[in-house]
Image (tube, rainbow, N blue to C red):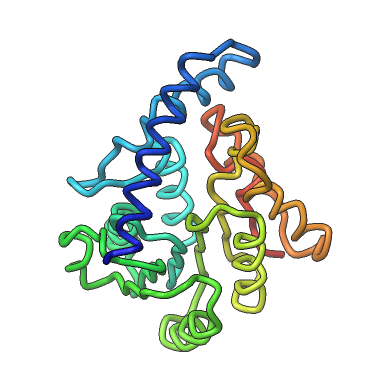
Amino acid sequence: MDVAGAFMRLMDVLRKLTSAVAQLIYRPTGSAAEEYHKWYYSNLVWNQTTWLGVQCWKSVSDMWNYQEILFDLKPSLVIEFGSRYGGSALFFANVMRHAGQPFKVVSVDISHKALDPIARRDPDILFIESSSTAPAVAEHIERLKGEYRGNIFAILDSDHSMDHVLAEMKLLRPLLSSGDYLVVEDSDINGHPVLPGFGPGPYEAIEAYEREFPNDYKHDVARENKFGWTSAPNGYLIRN
C-alpha cells in the first residue's frame, strides 16, 4: 500500500473541504491586502498554479520575489525542504540557469512518488527522498557546500507543524553563513491570517527559534511587504 500517496490524497480532500467551509462562513475582517490573502488561500489558487506545466503550490507574488532574490544573491546552492510535484524546484533551476554560475538545486521530501517526470529529469536538481530533519540530509548538504561554494538560498515548505519547522531551522543553523537567505513558507496559517485553528505552525516556529537564537537573522521586511501580502509573513530571513 502506498501510505504516503494515500496521505497526500487525503490531505488534498481536506484542503478542498476546508476551502468550501471557509467560503461559506467568510466575513471580511481585515485590510484589502488581508482580504485578498484570505480569498487567494481559501479559493485554493495556490493549489492550481503551474510552472511550465508542472504543479507549483506557491503564491505567484512570492515566486516573483524569489526570482529577484535568486538573481541578486546568485547562490551556488538552493535548498528546498518539501518537493511535492517538483514545480518549485524546476522554477528555481530555470531561474538559476540565467544567473551565470554553477549551481545545484537540492529538494528534499519524505516521498517523491508525486514528482512530475519533467522535474525529475532536470539535470540541475538533486531530489533526496528523506525526512528533512534527518542528520544524513545535513551531511549531504555539507558535502555539496564543498562542491558548490558560495551563498545559499533555503526554503522550508514541508511538514508545517511548529516542532518540525523548528527542527528544520536548527538543522540549517550550522549550514548557513552570513548573507545566506532563508524563507519559512506557510507562516500565514494558524490565523496569520489564514486557517485559524491549525495549531502552532511555521510562524510559531520562527518565534520559538528567535527566542533561542535572537541574533541569527534579520528580517527582510521590504521583500515581505513588496506585494502587499505573502504566504511567508515574518519568514523572509537573512543570516547575520
